[in-house]
Length: 483
Ligand SMILES: NC(=O)c1ccc[n+]([C@@H]2O[C@H](COP(=O)([O-])OP(=O)(O)OC[C@H]3O[C@@H](n4cnc5c(N)ncnc54)[C@H](O)[C@@H]3O)[C@@H](O)[C@H]2O)c1
Image 1 (tube, helix red, strand yellow):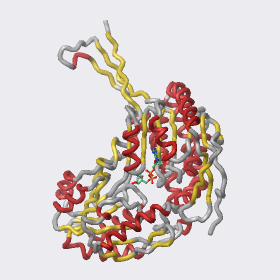
Image 2 (image 1 turned 180 degrees about the horizontal axis):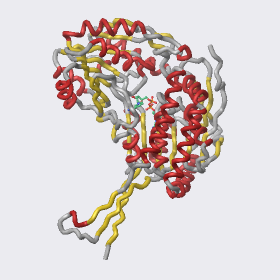
Image 3 (image 1 turned 45 degrees about the vertical axis):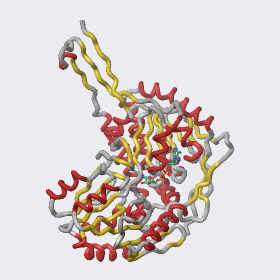
């Protein structure tokens, strides 16, 4: 096993332009999903320090918003360049911390640099508008409204473990370019990668107080951050349960939430089964299915189910399984609790009569890719999000039945429809209750300038570069009353 490059180094948190140890005197161990040792420690930041960070952010934000867009752009471009310079170091940290292959971790870092650059470009093309009063009956032509977008103040960015750099920067970059300061709370597992990303931003010379990295357990300081009166907007990505709790606790601040999913792949009788199977396999199993937009159930017409299942089974059995260090597709899950949960879903389905075709084997946190046929709607796996390498097949007798089961879910992130009939695809897409519908493709986030959203239990508000900037700014109207 490769020795850890991050050893048990203790990392500081970042506040008001300085790397600091917490006065709490406490640290949190960061474990790897696949290495036996603790790979790093982060500070357990106290509530008083949270107060201090938010105050520093407010003071700094005023000057930051006063800078020209070109000045703010220059810092963000430097940040993107630093990330690219640091890609090997950051990717290795991502691999060890969240168990992603080095190739995928590098892609995540480079995609993040691209994201930042595109965000700057997008912001440079946002303009306000003006309007005259007499467009409305009785309004006066002498009233001229100038409508601009202004920053909200201090944005709280809370990110999940699975894309610890990309999903964090997807909040931080739009917030910063729009003139906000940021309090960034990474997932506990993901905090080392998040820290490296902030080191890159620090190297870019960002003024003090604009970005603040607060580490600590979400369950300890999460509520305190969310309820804090100094927070002006919250951008959250994570599980639905955490998100619902957050929505209840926060008061009168704009929220954007990207939450869990149970994305179905609907395979019609007329689908190209070979194409569908390829998309479904990469959609369901890459990074062990630990993606919000992973395909988490297949709703296939019964007339083609045998053929699809045969193809899926061959492909599932060909997936590489093991350590991310060897470039495997199916890797150990983030922690034991997650592996226990996935195992519980498989056992429940098997107990209730589903046919486990392959997989259903576990070594530590590593769950072998598992394909389960003849799943019915009484089984937990038909509805619950596994965040693991397990794919249930539900056989349907009609399009209507598939759409009904798809829509009955508490989630509404994305749906894939596989068919050769484009008219039918659009007709079904219009009935589907998810943020996006993919026709003949796997569900996925991105390209990053597409709007990205979940409905129902999958979220509220919209991300995607332009939409994220919009969500972190508001309109300001100045009315000129001409004589
Ligand atoms: N829709 C999307 O864009 C998207 C993307 C990635 C992941 N996800 C979802 O995220 C989940 C997996 O990620 P996870 O396990 O890191 O999720 P999680 O909900 O456990 O944690 C997400 C973040 O919330 C923090 N947190 C925990 N308790 C908190 C509290 N009381 N107040 C504020 N913050 C708190 C955590 O520390 C972490 O930073 C899955 O459900 C997945 O579908 C959604």
